Every structure is written in C-alpha cells, then in structure tokens.
Image 1 (cartoon, rainbow, N blue to C red):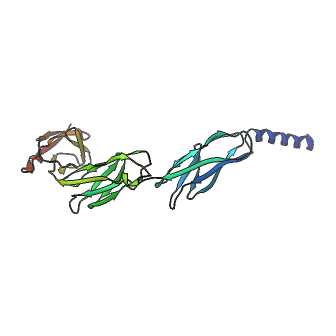
Image 2: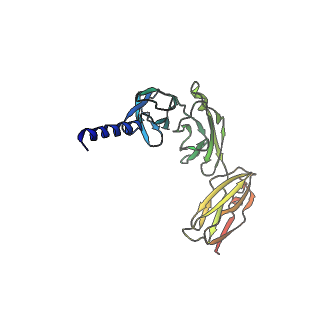
Length: 282
C-alpha cells in the first residue's frame, strides 16, 4: 500500500471515530449562584464525573459531541439548597452548552430552647427522626443540619436525660427562609421521673440480648451483652404502666422475664426496678 492511500485510510478512520464521539469532545456547563462563605457544592454529570465548587461562578464538564448529559447535585451545602435548571440533554454538535443554571437559596436553622434538664446530664434530640443533636445544658440549641425552605421540621426527644421525662412543644412546622425564626421555636421541657430497671442473670458474655419496655405503645429498646443491672433510656411519670419483655434473644440462649409489668410510682420507685431476666443455654 502506498503512503497516500495509507494516509487517506487514517484520516477516514479518524473522521469515523470523531463522528462516534471517539475524539471530539465539547463542554457542557453554566453558572452557579447563591453559594456563601464555607459552602461546598458537588455537581455530578451522569454517574462518574463530579466537580466541587466553593464559590459562585462558571463550571463545565467535558462531553462527547454526540453524547448525553445529566447534571445534578450530588452533595448539597449545609447552609443553602441548590437546584439545577436545563441540566439534561443530548449534544447535537460540537458547540458548547452554557445555559445550565444552578441556583442556591438559603437554608434555615432548626432549634429551640431546653429547660428543666438536670445538671451534668445530656439529651439527644431529633429533627424529622434523622438529624440529631446532643444537648448538655439548659438554654438554646440548634441542629447542625439546616432545614430546606418549604420542607417540614419535627423536633422530638430521642434519648432523654437519665431519670427525667421530657416533652416538646411548638416542635413542628414548615421551614421558611423568609421567616427563619419560625423554625427556632421548639420548647423542650424536662421534669424528674422514675426510671425503669432490670437485672440480667446468666447471659453469656459477648452475646447480645435486646430488651424492650413498652409504655402506651411506645417501645424503649435496650441491648446488653453481659449480666448486670440496667436502666432503660426512658424514665416515666407516676401512673404509667410498664411492660418489660425480650425483644431479641441472645444467640444460643433463652431468656425469660419475671416481675416485668406494673405501674410507675414516684412514691415507690422500687416498684419499677424489680424485673429479673434469667438466661439459660438452649
């Protein structure tokens, strides 16, 4: 084969590969607005390509000239919520796409005030049963994860302080970045309460036994891995019925409860610490 024919074949092959997206790439991108100091936004194209942005400005991804693109938010910043417009399409030429708009709007803190918590104690609060914050003193609190404007919030008690019972008022609503104070209204009040306790005998060390105390339909689960005396996470006010049962047996053992039912009584706190759990190998 002479050199001219060989060169023609190479050029022809290059054109075919370029037409298939093998060599010709162009850019797909746009502009990000609304990021603040310290914000970190991660954008993704399709499944494998990402870009990290920390300030407003332009961005772009390389895309084959006949390829599809789908720009989305992979990781949201905490203090803002970002949405993508014009983020999907298919290239029809080697001209760059520059009209993708990523707009970020402020998120809103969720929190409130705690009162009545005993000194040297701690409490875990939840927002929407997912985000958590640990409170160690009375006063204001705030979740590290902000709420997205227009989305609901619901502050509840995850784990109360030991030997206290806590309730939440004004803990639900809708996050609104036009009125951020509306999601800082949760009032968490704690009062002394009676703990519910149990003693475990015969449990093989290293195995896991899960107990549950059911009070008015609420299940307070507690796992142990050795014999001993234990206290459930939740304490209760006088008059509340308690019902201690085995939730999950330890491997290779059968555990049975005696004295596991009754009523909480502040004048007789011993009444709710008589439960005994005896375990034996099966």
